[in-house]
Length: 314
Image (cartoon, rainbow, N blue to C red; front, side, top):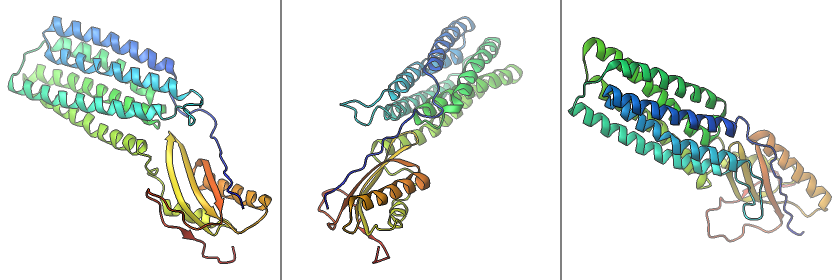
């Protein structure tokens, strides 16, 4: 029996992806906020506001990368990118994660320096501009909530949420400093915000790196998927099985399946049953299966050992 390949392309766009127009609005709003905080920091002699302006300025490349990734991800497959551009969002998430780590380290350094050298500020400027910044960053965060299952958008969501948290911290810190003159509270809050950003970012880097290295989707177990394929009548053995992620909610599988010698019409029925089970049980839509009668082939990469059906008559 000649080897047969079945390719099932997944159609449709990613669910919950914010429109590129929203990211464009978020970019303009962030740039406006940076200008306002720079002016307020200068007029109010507030290093905290100037630092937050620089913090918000770091959002600009993040938004630009996410915006471009959102546009690229919608592009169809072509002769060079045969899987399409779904991975653009994953690459953007990994890049943004690195930027977020740098921002968090910068916040730690700024908090340490501020703790050693306290600075008196005009609290009224901090209060007014922190409210404006909270409105802007809160609006961006709320707009990104629906698309946070997308790793690219989740990176931007985490960044925006950290910005909103920093605005709340500045507001609360300004009110407390006004009443107690405890200027040491400002760097402490800054360090806590940096820790929050760093903790959230490590998860994004770990997940995006796992996908870029063609790792098994977190919610799946390789042996469980193989056993499910073996449960299909007629399947005797499965080997050389690989499962990876092409993009958000888009998983792919390839494997070799040994079946008895039969007419092509009967083997097509087995193929259909396998695809239906993979789609229903695991949400795997992009499936490539090679039928064969031979045993385990030689290979120089990791390949799980063959799994055999417990029914010798299948």
